[in-house]
Length: 371
Image (cartoon, rainbow, N blue to C red; front, side):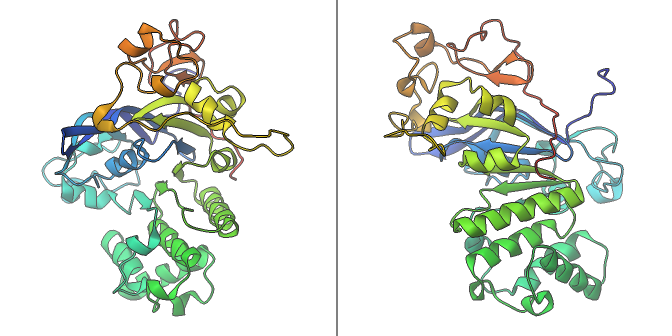
């Protein structure tokens, strides 16, 4: 396959850096993140709380509040399709965008982003009870997005909303439109959030820990629902989670984040079969394995560093098993390099890191595990 024939990513995040005002000055929550998502692909973004997963996703839709937040550097390239209307001059003002070329969402105005949010790119937030407005019915909240983005009458919008609720497995969908969020269970509210996100047939779904605070049975149902809807609609998904089991079952590609950086990136098969970064290895060692006879799980020592006071050099070195007082680790932050084809890591102790290519992570594999 020539470079010209190579499929192009739907979304490409390049060198994204986001900072926030804090008591000690500006703190970088995201520091040089690179990601790619291809059509129909699921990218799993995994890491501990505070590593920058959610901020990276929120940045895609310019939902980071500014101030206190600020986009310090980087680009988020969105590759619109010919069917998209986001680039028409009548909709975007005096700066029309060619539909055949990727556009940098970080340079879009608020008016332009309103055309993207919920229409081309939708998001499921972590906690549905705080994301749904308690004083409006479920139907009113779904209808708002439909009427904003689709040229339909109110009666047609109601039909679309009813179908959206039915698609996510909510029985008696028409009557549910008149229900308030507090009258629903956690699992039902999460289904409503998914229905809202998918009502306008987005090309990319940002799912920020969509099963948080749900019991394991409901978690399985929600994830199965997302796989089913993805297979039917061919949309891409950025799945943010701290659960490696969820990544293994649902993702094609995985990005492991630590302290605002991507420290390992590759296909799910490559990362799970051969984790390269000591942090990724630590995550796997801390998981129970069915059939194993471990007396005690091995944990990662220490705590995630404060973004306002990161260690010098590699931010993981105070917790790293491979660290033996190496000056290289304390003086220099290792870049993310392609160690083997399609598998990146940022660690001085990884075999082949010195010779690795300094390329941006980009894996176009789409498996059938979620079809």
